[in-house]
Image 1: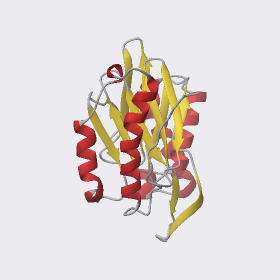
Image 2 (image 1 turned 45 degrees about the vertical axis):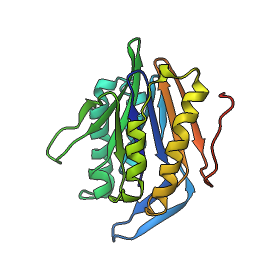
Image 3 (image 1 turned 90 degrees about the horizontal axis):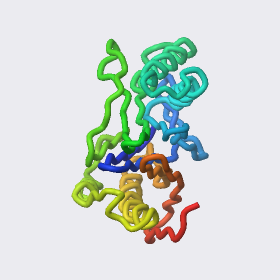
Image 4 (image 1 turned 135 degrees about the vertical axis):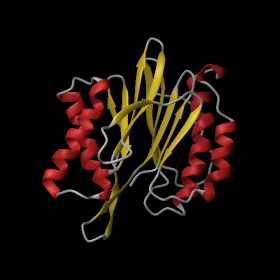
Length: 226
């Protein structure tokens, strides 16, 4: 399962994804993997992440890079093909496979844009949908966000564009501490996610990827970015 927070600003984007791998077996048993996995996949113009089955997402990224030449317009077809291959392997009617969806970023000379690739019914085709500026997208398995609702509201109210900060470090520190608090709180109520998370900060033709262990509630302070 996955807990993702994605922020589309006017001139930049921020994406975070937790690290826990959970497998729902055919008989309904939940298996928690003891290790952590990275759910953010980089390509030449940004990243791809998503919720659903990890095999479907990973194979989608492979098809997208190696066969589709990282053409964003055909990413929905890549997801559809990956899902169909997985259904040939394990059968149909698996919730995680059927409901796999993606978030991806891309940049151009005009800036950076966040997209979602999803469908709302099994009979529909996957769509590539641009996310509107100054908005927050949250994807999660556990439906209850009561513990973090106030933090999410404050995050939305406090949204600031990249160009309002003096440098990358101030920009990252401003958001990382707010996001770390949300991950810490929600992980106490949602066993399907980790408090640790990976992050992407992207503006035009530059992006920064990192990891926050998030083991305690102390303030996170970046002093340099490599």
